[in-house]
Picture 1: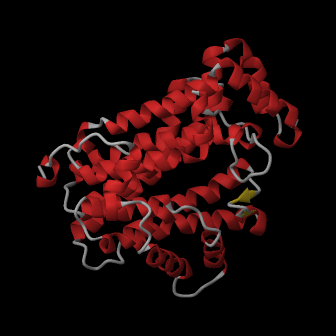
Picture 2: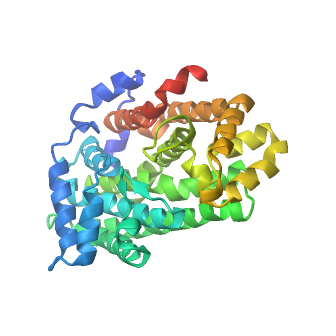
Length: 355
């Protein structure tokens, strides 16, 4: 076992104190993000900048919080590796995430991403698929950029990318099948979320652990502790769609797209008699879904206690992270996980008093 797994347990702190204790390991540290951005742009350009590379650069230039890149950099530092050693890995994680966004926008019919027209809207579906496919390939080039990494580490990083990319695609497919198969229950919903969203939170930490000298089994274990944080992010995203602002205009874009959300699942646990109503709402063509039906869903989800239940689950995940025995042995990584949980819940903090 790696000697880094036998550190003293971290004392119990509030989420804010945990984040402050992380210091240089914090997600807020962005000293190397510029290098990550430049590497992603260079990889997109390739040997000769052509239309696909331009589309990828255009998509990347719309911004985003770069959470996965920040997590890769900070996790490497938290586990004892210089942050600079993880620049290529941070770029790889962020490139893979953005590939899924372009493909998601096509599948969901989303017109806006980060306040800008989506890639398929700008360039058409066929070319957007090409841009997403290029983004799926570039992470494997990114992990070769640090020539100081040992071949075995590079091989482990590439293997992790392939495994988690496959996991993400399977999760996306399962999510899309929830409505078609009328699987509006907790188990299939969480299975899809752990695949689609959770894996892309486990991946940055798993790779950072390899860079820091952990073996593959240890790295996978540490990465999996962050899968639940991916679930937390998805739960808050589901809530934000109806009770916050996702930057997509009117609330309810997920319902209009026919997505089975945590609120849908929680509401049917409380009010199973609404199953037919919800199925009709979710199956209606996006452009034919009246906004008054969305407003009715917002009202019913609150009245039934579904919103309360999802907020409670978000709190429960945060508590599980706080008490996780593997993270407790790695104080800096533990602080980083709690900071990530705090960042995830920030957009819905205004609802916290309603739990």
